[in-house]
Image (cartoon, rainbow, N blue to C red; front, side, top):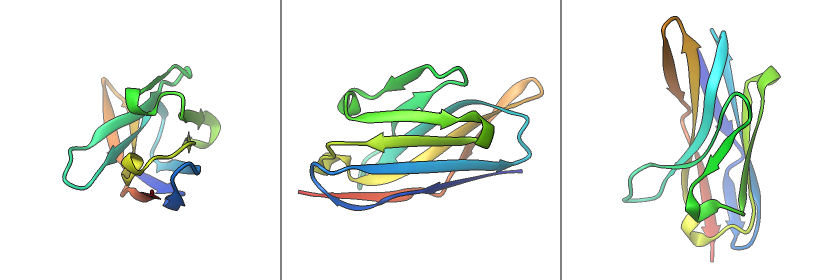
Length: 119
């Protein structure tokens, strides 16, 4: 079993910054991709940023130049530094961890952390 726990959300004014953290623990041999997703009220969950095991990154167009994803493979942790926050960044942010298993990969999700940006 794998547990995924996010932290770092909160209330911030537009233009401010937040750093989210996500730690995976449990029966983990190795981790493939790690990613952040968000869900705004009344909207579908969307991919914000993803980082591969080798450090390759990809971002949603809406956050390019403002968000930076990084990971600490030794501690099974992924971060997202969010700068120049906008009201449209408000939502629940979820961490996804893709764990390598025998012949397949397994996706695990955290419970989410709320980010609220006031304008």
